[in-house]
Amino acid sequence: MISHGKDIKIFTGTSNPALAAEICKIIGTKLGESEVKTFADGEASVSLYETVRGSDVFLINSTCKPVNDSLMELLIMIDACKRASAGRITAVIPYFGYARQDRKAKSRDPISAKLVANMLTAAGADRVLTMDLHADQIQGFFDIPVDNLRGNPIFVDYYAKKFGDRCEDMVVVSPDVGSVARARIFAQKLHMNLAIVDKRRQKANQCEVMNVIGDVAGKDCIIFDDMVDTAGSLCNAAKAIVEVGGANKVYACASHALLSGPAIERLNDSVITEIAFLNTIPVEFGKGCSKARYLSVAPMFAEAIERIYQEISIAKLFN
Image 1 (cartoon, rainbow, N blue to C red):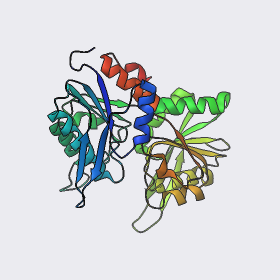
Image 2: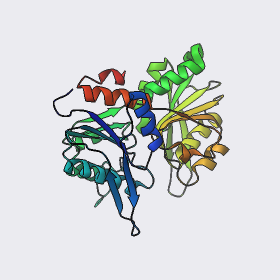
Image 3: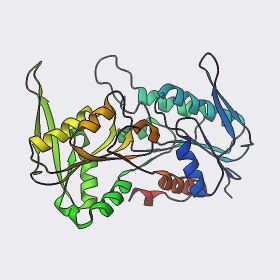
Image 4: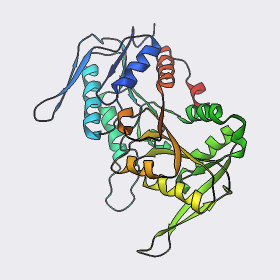
């Protein structure tokens, strides 16, 4: 037992209950009895049907579509646990919404990621467990501990088994200059070379020119990114490394499959052979995408939750 909680309790909202159930199955505990519903006027309501007094509570809810509803659910769940005298409250957010609004891009812009961090802290969260934040510095927006798990070990394991010795002849491609750092780490772990797609607009109202930095001619490539929203940048990058760079086959992977708007149609029509996602966002979001394959993050989150509960290091999960 631990000093801040006599037992462990795990609850989930409505955003990704399948992932929460899988995490509980791995840990060997049952999902907490609760109900999250919506009143006629759209307000969220949370009811916990078991005691959490003194417990180490983990609340699992990705803040994905509908983003604001998912976020309010999580905040209300945190408040309910706080008022019920929970020993410690950990917000488990596999996908952290608003993460792209992490700085002022122009005058009078909000920094919404910081606002969300303030709201989670004010609601009563004692720590946050998440995966592949869009920008690492978001951890500094919080005044409570934040564990930002990495999805790349899951992808490394998947592609190492899928391609084996062929990995050394393949190339990891960053879809833009901003993703180079995470793509480089991924490439090093698989012993692959690295290439970059550089897109720029030469003049106003002219099409973007795609340049491929690195040798991809005749090689199989893996485009590595943190999320896919409308899939425009990803599909254009894949097209560029084939048409401009002369690549052979193109694979892709990304942690978070938002798949908004025309994303599924674009992926199905693209030159990408297969795209691997993590199930931080419900698999149902990718329904209709014939090229999508989902890998589970449940084992990693289950181990992180167990280690946090037992008060031991989670550093091994980053390797």
